[in-house]
Image 1 (tube, rainbow, N blue to C red):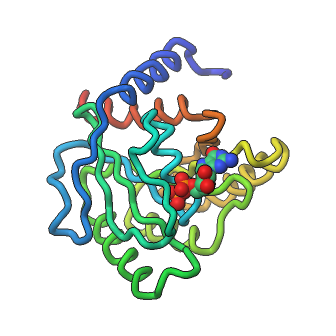
Image 2 (tube, rainbow, N blue to C red; image 1 turned 90 degrees about the vertical axis):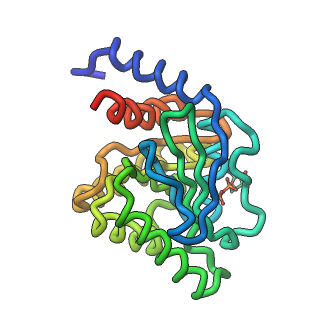
Length: 219
Ligand code: GDP
């Protein structure tokens, strides 16, 4: 890419590859704030509508088939799951949202627990907000973006299931999203395009996430 030092880019990819090859283990499931683990490591959280491909992406990133369980009953899991990666980074799997059959009660619980988490979590470096590459933003996604903007939590959009749409269609969705994100104060301008099936974009996303762990260590 013009203006970018290829060597540095290669070093970031290499570090991402290395970090995500380290031991990754489930540490905590929290259903309320009291159950959150201590803020000992930088954290990157993953959010998205139910069925967006969040479990599949987490499994692809960590190279494990069953780290995050793919949801057979979308909307049911209302807990925050913490995974410690290589003793350097905490990956936080937030509950899926926007599932039509989820009761109002569970949606409210999602927002309360997650809002509180987002507002008070000094160790949270970034939220990866997953969006289906075929569909772009839905209203429920916009609600979440607004929560993140208000909480001033840095977030990055990650398109999932890129293998399911034609390149031109994917590019149209990406461009529309980029234009919308320009008006959002806490949005990271770069949009990751990924597929858990083909592995596209996974190495680059590993590098982007691993860089957040480094930032903490070199401070
Ligand atoms: P979650 O509810 O967000 O955790 O979504 P899952 O990871 O359970 O995925 C939902 C469905 O989408 C499953 O049937 C997956 O096999 C499928 N899926 C997930 N990621 C991809 C992908 O990158 N490409 C394709 N073609 N299907 C995917």
